View 1 (cartoon, rainbow, N blue to C red):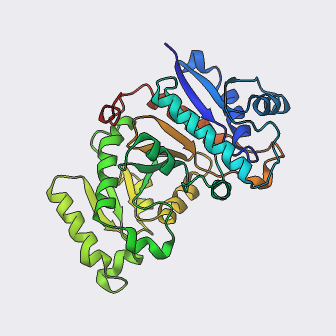
View 2: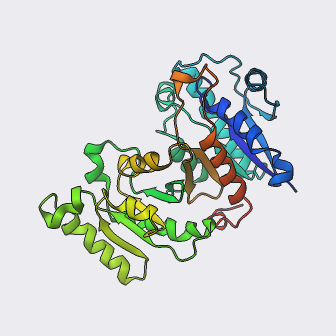
Length: 323
C-alpha cells in the first residue's frame, strides 16, 4: 500500500500552506517517485483557493473539523491559533490510528497558540503529550549537521536551573537509538559546554567542572560514544567537517543559531522518541511575506523528503507504545 504523509498546514495567516503546496509540486509525483501520497490537513476551501492562486494542483485534503476559509495574512490571532493547533491534533490522531504514516507540520505561531490557550509552547511538547511520552527530543538537521537540544523553549535565565543530568542523558540516548534511522550505526556525539570556552577550567562558570565533565566521563565509561564538553564556538565547525555525527546543544539558541546559519533553507526539525514520524521545516510563519507568494519551499521540501524516507524504515520507538 502507498504510504500517506499528512501535512498540517500551520498558521493560516503565515506561509505554511504556501510552502507546503510548492513543496509537493516541486518534489514531483510522490506516488511514483517515493511510493507516498501527500494529504493536506486543514480547511479545504483555504487549501484549494491558495493552490489556484499559486498555480499548482489542488492536493488531496483531509477535511478538518475546524474551518478557516479566508486567511488574514500577517495577523496573529487566537482564531488562527485554534485552527492550526486543531490541524496538528488531527494529524497526530491520523498517525496514531494508522491512517497516516508520517506527519509534516507547517509552521505555527507560538503567540497565536498562547492567545488561543492551547497550553503548549510548540509542536514538540504537544506531540509528546498526545503520544503519551516524556522521553522525546528535538533534532534539527541540515546539510550534514545534526543538533539535538537538551533544553528547548526555556528562557536563557532559567537554563542553568532546568539543565540537568537527565536532560543530557536523554539527548544522548535518543541519538544512539535514532541515528540508525539516518544510516549512522556507530555515532560519534559531541556535547557542548554551557559556558564560554566550556568554562575554561572553571574560570568562566563552574558547571563544567562541577558536573558536566564528570557526567560525560561517566557516560564514556558506560560505553556511550560521547565527547566533550566542547566549546560551543568550535564544536559545530568540527561537526560539519566530520568530527561528530551529531551535537548535543544545551539550550535553544546555542544549537539553532549555528544550524540556521549553516542550513537555513534546508534545515529540518525531527521529533525523536515518538511512536509516529514527525518532521517540520526549520523556520517560522514569516508573516511579513505571507501574502506575497515568494516564500521559498526548500526547508519544507527537505522535511517532506525526510518524512517519506523515515516512514519506510523501522521506528525504534513504535514498539514502546500500545497499539
